[in-house]
Amino acid sequence: MPPEERFVPRFAAEPPQDALPYGRWEQRLREEFLAAAAALEGQPEDIGEPEAINWFPDRSWHGRSYVPATAATAGGYELFGYVRYLPGGEDGEPSDFAVQVDFTEETAERNPDWRLDICDEVIGSWRGEGGAVAAMTLVWGRPLVSGGAVATAELAGLAVDQCAVLDERFTLIAPDDYRQDLLEIKLFDAAGKMLASESLYAGEDEGEDGAG
Image (cartoon, rainbow, N blue to C red; front, side, top):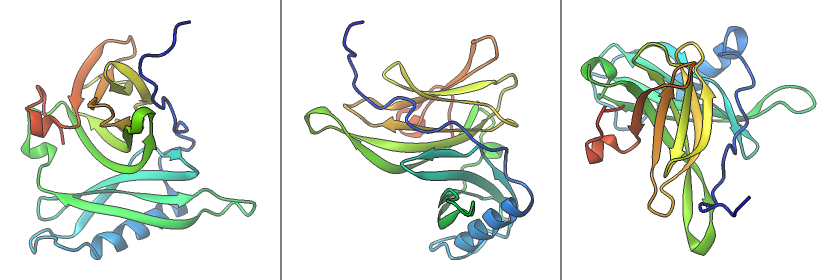
């Protein structure tokens, strides 16, 4: 087999290990998320109270697990972010919780042309050859077209992560912005037919489908 043209981390994150949060675990995550949302600086006065939280599949990388979330607000905005923690040790209890939360007024309801509703956040870096650095990026979203079975992240046409769509939600962790290559998120049906394709930078470069 010839050497790889692009030496980048592929499928670096563990696949989802658990079902979507429920019960006492969901309550713990919700408390962490809402506390961070209440302390969020710079939020508009009309943002309103958060409504139901939508949790996304967990992914683990570099020893920590991430559970992304979104929540519509009464004011028509959307909160988005994740809860990060250390998985349970010998006692089985997760620890060292941290939360990242932000808000946006660009929602899927206001953009009927979107085919994927995507959020992303850089969670680390990976140093490559010649001093190049990839931004390890957590991506979570939901299809806005029917039939989606698998979401993938591609860098210059190379698949670097994938996740089965669970309850119309998916989570990816992949290298981005590496050697001038940018991530593209794709949605496929069970037969492998591509249903949607979005750059994380669609809002900046006028991507063909639009994304959150």
